[in-house]
Length: 307
Ligand SMILES: *[C@@H]1O[C@H](CO)[C@@H](O)[C@H](O)[C@H]1NC(C)=O
Ligand SMILES: *[C@@H]1O[C@H](CO)[C@@H](O)[C@H](O)[C@H]1NC(C)=O
Ligand SMILES: *[C@@H]1O[C@H](CO)[C@@H](O)[C@H](O)[C@H]1NC(C)=O
Image (cartoon, rainbow, N blue to C red):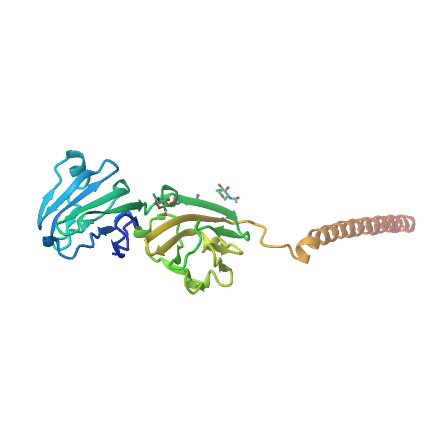
């Protein structure tokens, strides 16, 4: 999965707070610019960028000319990622990774103002936490409710999107076609919008929790079987979660009707009545046959007597 949002974060220049540590929160894959807040580097003797608690030198800018790092480990770690602004000496790190988290310090030595420091605490958080990237499988019997949880509390800048594809073959976002958007929650307005999907299969049974963005299907049907994709857009990046939902068919559909409860009793009684009637008919037939037989016997006796 690709990151759909590429952000470039630039630290703000706030007054003369040189001793303060600026905390920068960035998402894995984003780019970040650490601002020296120097207007013209030509007037400044030197800017030395260091990394980590031991202040290993990352880059040096001396009166506009740039010297890159030569320390092996750091060079490898930041290879092709660093850029110094020739005007300001600000440090840009592109396509940042979790391993680049830590303290960055700009030591600025100016002829006029002496030496000052700007310290940045860069906190890189993962786009795909291992929990999120795992496909969650859920199964239930038809008619039962199901809630797919986002695991987050919706913030003001968040946009929650739920998408569905009616197949459980590939629950990979980029690999499936016919994806339908079925629910949306705007964190700012707390507005939810629901879509019953193709053929209205979700008609009247979807709901979205305004606080968490959890999606609930109140009465599941077998046609709700499929992959559900959750996309959480926030101002620090986009996160995804995936669910494989299987709704098992049951022979018992919903609450039993009056007829389903009384039916078997009525049927059994009916069969018993039939059997009894059958027996009575048989018995009566037998009686008729025997009396007929008796009468024919008498007739033949009479005939014999006459002859
Ligand atoms: C980095 O960000 C994460 C998530 O926002 C937070 O939990 C953590 O405390 C932060 N770490 C630092 C050192 O600021
Ligand atoms: C649904 O069916 C599958 C496969 O037959 C089974 O593993 C699963 O436990 C069933 N789920 C429920 C809730 O009965
Ligand atoms: C989703 O679950 C169903 C039923 O357990 C399974 O047949 C299917 O292969 C799963 N899909 C994926 C992509 O894992």
